[in-house]
Image (cartoon, rainbow, N blue to C red):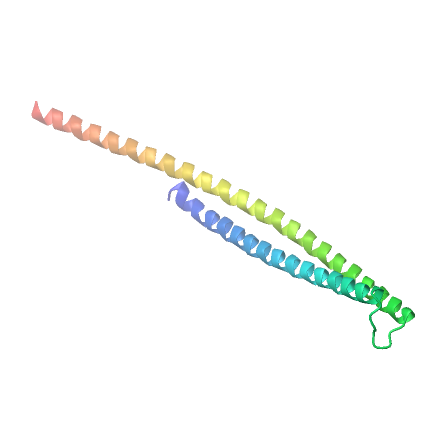
Amino acid sequence: MTRSKRMQPVAQVAESRQQDAARILGERQRALDEQQRRLDQLNEYRGDYASRFEDGQEWIGLNVRDYRLFLTRLNQAIEEQAARVERARAELEKSRGRWTECRVHRDAVGKAMDRFHEEERIEEMRRDQAESDELGQRGGRGQR
């Protein structure tokens, strides 16, 4: 069995791992985007309510104390969401590192496979040439 054929399972595993890492990276990116979207919504929500209150719009019986309590809770929710965004960002970066490692490994295995194929091609050409030379020598002896 040739070296390239023996290496084929390793190449398949490397490709599979790289594809899995790419899939996970995509999932992590979507999770970060979703967490960021929620944070943006909360910030927009806070901005809307703050401007309404400051503009003096009526708030269905909401007094300043209740407004401040509401704003405190909203700020806490924003802080918690910001922490989720940071965790999602850290997970994304970890996944990106894993994907990069898998891609580098897959590429290295691919280069080794290419080198093995080239060596096998050269060896086959040498065998063919040797066989051709041998046939030529036999043919030359038989004609004398």
